[in-house]
Length: 331
Image (cartoon, rainbow, N blue to C red; front, top):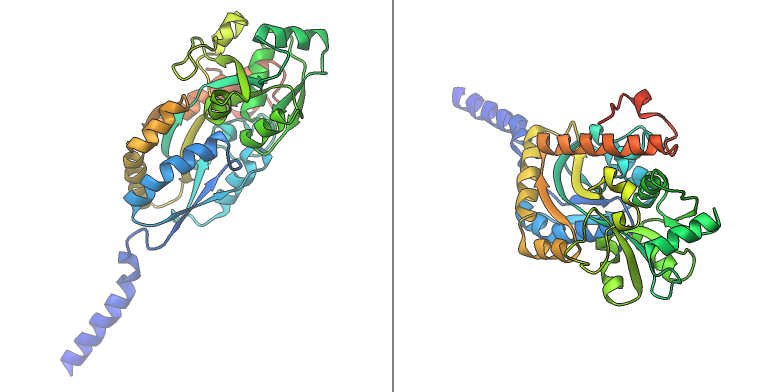
């Protein structure tokens, strides 16, 4: 009889502890891309995803969920269970959502599994554009304020932020036309809907190489290896140098309250994935700098990037809410 009770007790014990011993991941994971298909964030996400799947041992289903300059996807992941099964493939945009009054969420609410890399932006125009240099474009904007149309991705997106940085250095009154990501915006530019668009090199490089569009300048203090013949923006606009180097970044995030052991697994997975040769080649070809940082180091990077950028927006009058009111100190 005692043996029966012992067996029963053991069975009950196993049924209680069994689920707690389950190893993450037990099923497929969802990777939510902040922007639409074909844009820079989507390109980086889909490049790292296969190596991440291999390291994780489960599929990572990629879902594009654009809108609200990244606020839609950020809110979606924040509302998902804190179990590590919903990842955010995000870019820099949430760090600007507060000052642009887009959303109260930023990367303080998320754990940086990995900041995969950062990009360099370009000022792109169609191949047949009358603007042969950045100086030509700036002169046209000064001559007809508000008439030149700029492709945008909404408040706090890369184009609007670069617009604010330029406006801090010269007269720059343009009409911004929003699109759901850099890919759709660049496509619209080629269709004549806008005159130019600031974009990450990773989104524009293939079209530039194909001769469908031209880069008037790289938003960098010096030329870059990917586009060695394109001049740095400081050649035409030296005053913008105080904000540089600056550029978009790409990373993988989960909710802060995801269990530590799950975070550790994901950190290991993406650290390995960011060393994958195919991913490294794509990043190099697209003009991106691989960072491969996580945790405290990534948090420090995110904090500094936010401080520099939101105060640039504030100083140009582009911010809707002062960084000071949000407790963000000047860098």
